[in-house]
Structures are given as structure tokens and as C-alpha cells.
Length: 288
Image (cartoon, rainbow, N blue to C red):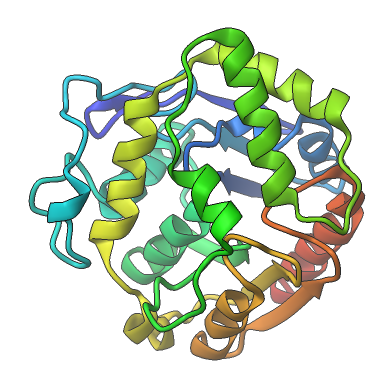
């Protein structure tokens, strides 16, 4: 699907006529991290589920003609010198909805995807029926920082050689998962192999990070969100600590916070029932 100057690759689950749920994934993360079974289970609750690769990741357009941003020159709220911002990624999302003839959807965003979802609710509220923000943040600079080990894996270069990429993937998600929920390394290895085959772009990861950093804080805008909002956050998140979820819930009028014990900055199968049930209850409660 072509929109906003890029090609966006997407997949759907469920019956086209059911209420649409659009899933937006996070930084440097392909749509397959909304795993097949997760999407199938959500669709089985009566929804038309859409997942997609953001620009610069997976099988969507890589903007490799753009230089890797100079992070020393990036200032929050000042997008000069970056090829795109979260606002551009928001328009990618709207373009996907337009191409599918979806006027309004239930929006679920994880991490950076939650940041895009916030902007979507702020700038185009008529396109958003309900909002669910999972392990995300307002970008408030006064929030606690990531744990050093999480920041380290986020910033280190992504290998292009297959075996090294797989080990990088396993270590990254092992740390982001946190220590409380057991890790299924065989499952992670399958996701790593599939991610590698679908396409790796170290430059794309850097450009997405630059988009986050240059887009600035949304903290002062949250009170303008009028969309029914659910905030889901793990109390063991090493990248965006639980305070980030609390900050979102406190800033968005009428929102509800669901804290999942032991969940880190990942969506392992152990939390799927909890997360899916929370999303479904939120949609049904707000759709009456």
C-alpha cells in the first residue's frame, strides 16, 4: 500500500466487516512482534485486526537514501536535520486506514507505536474510536530514565550478518523482557529468524529513534485527548519505567491504567490473555 511517499506492508486477521483494531508497533520492531496467535485471538473476539510495518522497518519502505541523523544535533521539538518525525509516521497510519476504507478504528500502540497513537488522537480524533497505549510514554523529560542495560541494547549497532543478528535479537529482547517472566528462547529465535528474512535496516532504526527524539514531549498536550483511553504498562519495564504509564494515565482525562505485574518492555505469551482481555473490555465499555 502506497501512502505519504512510502510503501507500507500490512496484514489483516478476522472478518472485514467487524470493528477494526489497528496495531502500531514500536521502535525498530516489525509487525510480526504482534505475533500471529495474539492477532488471531484478538480477531476471534469479534474484531478486524490490522498490523503493519512502520516505515524504515521490515518490508515497508527503507529511507536508506537519507543520511543517518547526527544525534548530537537533535533537539526535542526541533525536527531540523531529521528525515521525518512521529508526525510523518502518523500520516502513514492514516494513509493505511484510508486505503482500507476505515474511517474510524480502535487504535492500539506499543512503545513508539503508542507515541504515534497519541498524536493520532490529538490531531485526528474523529479517526480514533478508542485508544490503548501499551508500554509507552508522553516523552516527558522529567520521567525516570531507562535502566542502563536497556539503554545499552537500544543504542548499540544492529548486525547485518545473520547469526550475529539473531544473537543480538535474543539478547535485546531478553533484557527488554525483564527478569520476572520466563523467556522462551526458541520462540524468540523463530521471531529473530523471521525478522532477519523480512529485512534489517540499522539506518532505519536510527532514523526512527531520531524521529522520537526530535518530536519532543507530548506531556502538555495530553489533556486535550478526548478519546476513551486505556494505558497498559508493566511494573518491570526496564526501558520505559512504570512511571511513564502513570504519567500518561494522569495526563489523559478519564483514562484508566492497568498495571501488569512482572511485564517488562515486551509482549510475551504469558501476558497475552491479560492484555487482550483488557483491550476487549475497554472497547466494549466505551462502545455502549
